[in-house]
Image 1 (cartoon, helix red, strand yellow):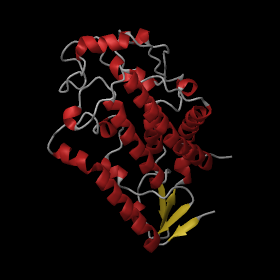
Image 2 (image 1 turned 60 degrees about the horizontal axis):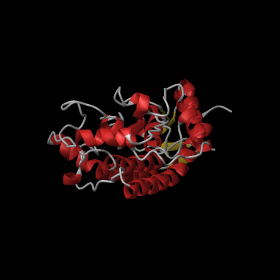
Image 3 (image 1 turned 90 degrees about the horizontal axis):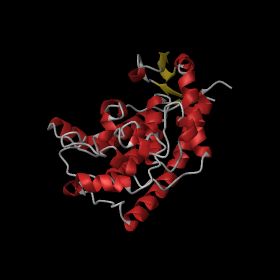
Image 4 (image 1 turned 180 degrees about the vertical axis):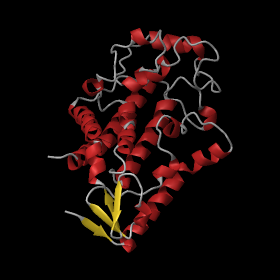
Length: 286
């Protein structure tokens, strides 16, 4: 079934979406103009490749035809004919293998029991035994110093299940992880308690674009933004001058705080993951 939207129906939705994006990215764009790096918020625009101007474009999702949608003429993933724009079935077919892989990963993650005992040690493992000048966010001091940071890593069991976090571990830290994730093992290891797996819902939403409805895409973006904040508050860096109160995961109280936030994010992520699976099912041929 196709829904036809007139310009008076869809143009306000597109404008409201752009305004919402402008509010979300205003700080990032202002800092970029000043050439001022930010160790927390830049992540969503450096690690993930979607640019703010791309995020501003509103997409209705499958089964919607935009009457008078000349703004979508020539835009990848769309057909524009007879004064109306809709998603291009040929583009969906061309990307069927990618959509199938994304669905497999998301569905496997939904079916797996979430784990809440990692305590964000992936960030600590990324600086383990590094020399001065080698740390990624070198402008920001390690809260416990280099030696104290190494002691935290060595005194905990590390169980990172996410490949794209594990691949940034330092070489000495890699053997300390209980798992050895690879890209091929990702569907077999990903689980819904992992902060990075839930942040990556934004990545999968963008990789499914322009098929992803913009309401779902921005919900994933906002989740990723909030998770990134916890991720860095629980990291070994001292970001208090930026207003980020540390979550001291080396203490029992810090562990409890981290695990509670992790559970809340897992609860928030689950319906978004389910919606992305449903989107893949709607796109894939039966």
